[in-house]
Length: 572
Image (cartoon, rainbow, N blue to C red):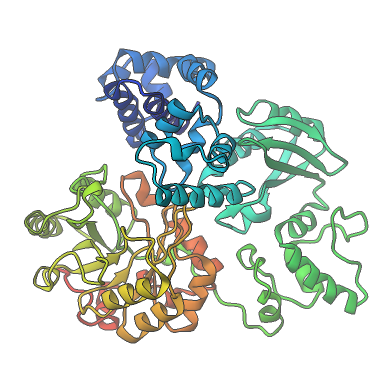
């Protein structure tokens, strides 16, 4: 098992114990073990072989034994016993917006609820009203969150599928019968919510694919469907498909399986008008040894990158030579949103700075939470002033990179900011974000964010819709009005690269682009490893048709100061 898989098992154990009502200190041991493993750069296999697991803070004898058990067997009996006792779906309860482990524990202990379907039956049967401190408003909110999650069940957030996708890819890549391998479908298009996981493999034997998948934990019932497809399921019924093809047909299969149905229909309309064989699945009559570029070229089109094969207007843009030159990750010069252990981050200020420098950034901003974010250990004015001083000192010590003093400042319900302007003026970067009061009406929320945009010290509006993929939708807000205000006042809107957010989403990015707004791609890193997730934000930017010049982070700091006078300060 990989580090991340072992960490997830411990995280699940901690949550299961809390739901069960076990000793909170005992549950915290497993939470801490998961956090420790998340931060480890070393592989647990190597540490176990060296006998040094116990030297890691947070890993005692019991945790060490369970790590070794998982490394040797791929299972944890303690975890499996809890699942057997409490039900395989009980952890789904805490995925509902507004339902934490305490509420899930009450459902479990008082009503015997062990799954989403159990909770649905309890709500529909009016059983929640029998619980203390469970009023009509709370029940309605839980019902709304459950409805959202039920609708999302046909999809999976990208972040949820990434670990099994990596495991499947590695298993197939190591299969000697497979000569070439690529993701396809919505995964290749970098959709943030996935309908399936699909790959194309150049392979002479579909049975070899079945055998390779059979060895992957979490892959269920791999089987040959037909001459082209091997099918299976992962993550509780999520469909997995592997297309087995020859070298000659590889890119044709890749082309057909990458585009949406709308994209393929439009291609077929062009093909039909030119008397060309329709593009379809499977491809018995499609010309062999054609690259994707050849296929589009035969239809009189330039190559369309996978990220744009979701858009109904990409073919029209291609036919008129109006496709954008999309931003690349290598275009980024900076990361302007990250947290340290001063607030809710897990890396020290120096660790975050030094890692960012090693990644080649020209400048970064430290943006810990403000005082109203109590759950995130937000900084008081006094603590922020002390941090500013420390950032200034570190900035003088770091060669080749500028470290800016910033803050992710809460936008309060009336649109004012969590710190006074006198303190904001001491910062180089201000990210203004909504973290509470998410249920207010659209007009009120829109006015709230626009008032923050009008503050002369605000640089960026952070995660502008507040969505959490697979957990809660964004709050009600008029994004067109927000974008117009941002353009008028020279404020950027963020593409938050945290895989749980990916906010703004691509269609909103295009709206902002059309209104002349600069976008800012940031990691919102809360740990050292998080600093490497900018690619997720770049994928959103590309799906939103952004070019290099549309993204704030691609400019040198001196240019950014010129573009956003008064809203970006600092520098050596």
